[in-house]
Image 1 (cartoon, rainbow over the protein chains, first blue to last red):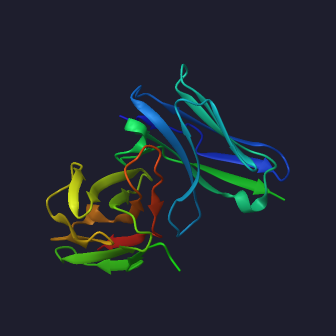
Image 2: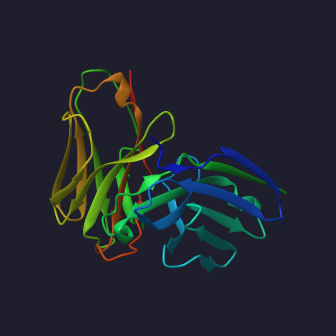
Length: 114
Length: 114
């Protein structure tokens, strides 16, 4: 039973364009969401997060949007750069993330072509 | 200076052996975790310790035993290894359990059981 779903296993984007990675969740108790980036043979690296009291959070080229009614969030990267090529994991947590039990999606592999 | 470090990074061992993976964090965090990424790429929590005390123990065989000698260390001992234990194991840590804490991951330990 996947509570966090990333339905696109891969995404290919041209350098300079926008990358949009999507994530859906089923558990209405989730109230804290994070995106992690992972390079091969390395651990996931925290990218950006959003609390359910917000619908948007921005950090430089990265913006996360949350649509609670649709139980959907997305990560926008603009402009995309070749160094952004990695696997992106969406993660969700209940209780504001205080218990640390993150539920991860399966990841989306982003390839940014020069 | 790695924030969350785990050793070994690669481990190949035979079925039935007992092995340990060590983890240390120098972030001053109170909470440490072990996550497992299986062959299907799902990243799932196994254990969580807060100030040396076990707070999350997901459905994991009792052949897996975490040990936390102090709050900066959380080691994972695995007894009687089985083929299905082959996976990538990630250690992680996070700060105080206020809402919105971020989990920081180590680089992972690739365990192969043959």
